[in-house]
Image (cartoon, rainbow over all chains, first blue to last red; front, side, top):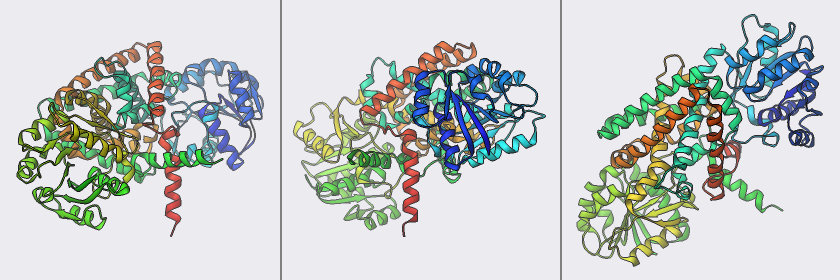
Length: 312
Length: 312
């Protein structure tokens, strides 16, 4: 589908795109750039890219698809660097979690004849780096594209077909709406996960060791997303301030109401609200966005870990 | 280890205790009681109990171990009913998530010669009912016992050995401390999970369908524990009010600080706090309390679900 794909940044998402491209033979060649020498060496060793460059400008030479897979905070700097080297007709896209900021920082620098179409695959794990990627990451997940007004429909359609070939469903929407939706489905969940881990770590009357031992009561679920890449998440919050603050305001308002129900022993309010939550979970499982296996299938995960560790 | 075990309530925990007892042959016979006719029929069909009674008083006759596996809110009523029928020397225990309330509601009714030793296995899944149980639920999890002052050390040791034989590690602590620890490791995590699901369900500008489709961004992790049994959780919050309100107060205070860091663009505070959270996750994995598989091993869970669905 593309002659030469340039991945700017080869972490979890960049490496997964490479695996998924190769799985279906979607790219003539894949090259990439990474700031760190270690990442470049790993990417070459794993065959994620044929060439690994220190400079993003070198990586994009002759590429008909360029994918920014770096934290949002460095978009501006990188785009200023690569802009003069982008091939005419190339598609420039990204995978960042805030589309308004992506457009703000990238669009002004894109030369005429290059198609900038922001994208966001709603997929990931808590692991980071080039070794964390795998071909199935995007399977049955959604990828949102937020083409700016006036974007070339053929370029949009081409990028849409690419994401479908990588395994995703694709939805188009405006950048502002994307950022609002992601604030509630991703950004605020991460923030409250980070927050409760932090609260738990600073208690005087409960030790860290107790928090760890008894984490199977629910706490451990939060620690997974709270161990996601800190740089990436810092940049998300700095760049989606308004939507996150709006959703946080609502979350806190609702939490205050729940707290009040507990204080005044209002069991009926608690019961009704708790019952309603089951419906949402069912919807997510029916939509294929989570496993129905109890406990996220942790038992199976443990069992297969045990199996593979007993193999020679 | 016991001649006759009576399970009062045969849901996720009661049925898992039955499976784990049978796995190691720890009980001469297992009987149970359940309010619902359907639950009794299922429990008999699955061989969870040899006899299923509608009345808890009938179930406890002649039992040397009685385990309350019902929501906290009905402890008082059930114990008043079974007290005259408890066998001398029997151990009476429970599995509830608030030990202060268990002692408050149960201890006054326990006849002399019966050993009341509250317990709490820190284990579960989001599923409920007699079909949800499995023998491995308690393996490598912690079970906390909170023996009241003056409890018979031999009875405590016997119950401790039982939980170890069921697969658990056992820790003894005071009821008040247990309730504080569980407030942060279990109760507040459930409350904020319920809360964000509720917040997401009531947005005007984001549809329920969008929340579901894009839940893989983090939100879906919260829906798992938010689909736990609503009656059980209502009773937890009504019965651990002080500790939950204290932990909620701290959580909200910390969240306000994070919100402020976002508002003022304080990236350094965000980065430091996000980085610290990874350490806690590592501790939980090293302690064997969660899987190291990315995404809780959801990929494996999907793969084995696919395998089993293709089997005849």
